[in-house]
Image (tube, rainbow, N blue to C red; front, side, top):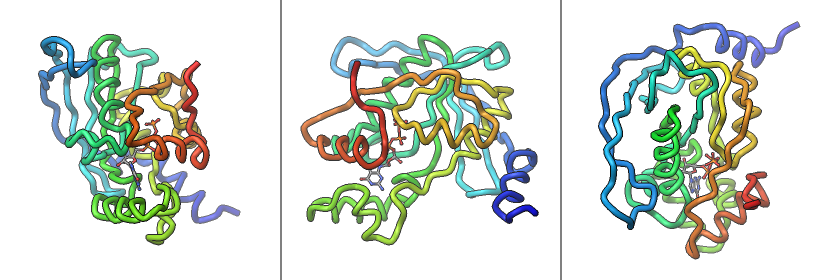
Length: 223
Ligand SMILES: Nc1nc2c(ncn2[C@@H]2O[C@H](COP(=O)(O)OP(=O)(O)OP(=O)(O)O)[C@@H](O)[C@H]2O)c(=O)[nH]1
């Protein structure tokens, strides 16, 4: 006897037709690990664009180095955060995490999967509504619940498929979130090492970070 969920998972593990690499470009990009110091260096990345039949979002892989020669690459699976990544919001740590991860993979080689799962999967407008509720006292988890969502709606099979498309099944994952490791394992990606990414903590995001630690099991103690 198989449950429907098991059938779906089986299909998703083995059906590579669910995802397609549509474009590959060169992307020269400025690297500035410490935003206030010195001129940024230029680094030459590749950017692969994917379409898929699961969420119909356009996800991308930013690659530093020769992907065919990667053995166990450094990988960051970054969830879209317009407010943090683009506008430098201090309500979260997303912007500094993205910049820092970009500098890390520029130096060591590796991949950033930029997944269009804004607001932990609830979308931009709902995230802004969640921020409104947070301004009235809710924490990030409570705000999602008040809007009728689970705390985190993200799924990781597409990240796993993109890695498989790149010929990768073992990675060093840059994250503080152990759930990502377990989720990837279900789709055949083995995390050999977790690389912490504790940056971007500010006065404005103390309670946000606290909630990640206390309610979402993020590993945020520096040691
Ligand atoms: N729903 C909701 N999403 C948020 C909020 N603040 C940031 N996000 C989203 O959270 C996502 C990033 O998730 P995080 O929990 O910060 O980090 P993570 O990806 O789980 O873990 P790391 O790999 O350690 O960064 C992005 O999609 C952001 O848009 C919020 O208050 N509410």
